[in-house]
Image 1 (cartoon, rainbow, N blue to C red):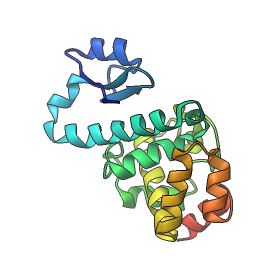
Image 2 (image 1 turned 120 degrees about the vertical axis):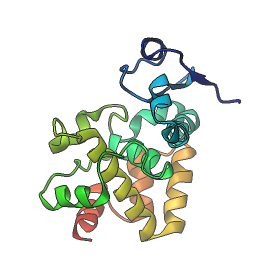
Image 3 (image 1 turned 180 degrees about the horizontal axis):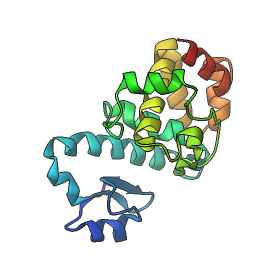
Image 4 (image 1 turned 30 degrees about the vertical axis):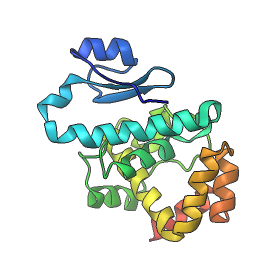
Length: 188
């Protein structure tokens, strides 16, 4: 059905309607649609990438319905940041993210969990630009998975869209679990 996109008039209105903080640029409500914060008008070039990022969340949410909560946060944000070409991770470059990975600061390799909860960021929680670092690392990991085998990556996404449990779809697509693939990602 048609996508409802709400462009809010005030930051407070955005927060009330979306359930997000006033400082967040956009958000998705599972049943009500996509909300954009007027703070986006301060940087008009960010509007399209933020919209793509949030549309990714909305699409996956609408496709998966109840199983959407099964996604780990690194996947949820990593995929949205990947399809939006970095939107959500602008404050951290790929080189900065690589430096943090080399220092042992990387998201935990959860295979399920709270897609909305940044408490899944592990050692990144509380760091300066921690959410941006989390999104960047998630995006880099998604890119790594796609490079492993583009055909299997696509099938993985289609399996998720069809309602498959995340850990089952991931294991089938990549012949292993997230932790094993994350070790290969770190080594690369």
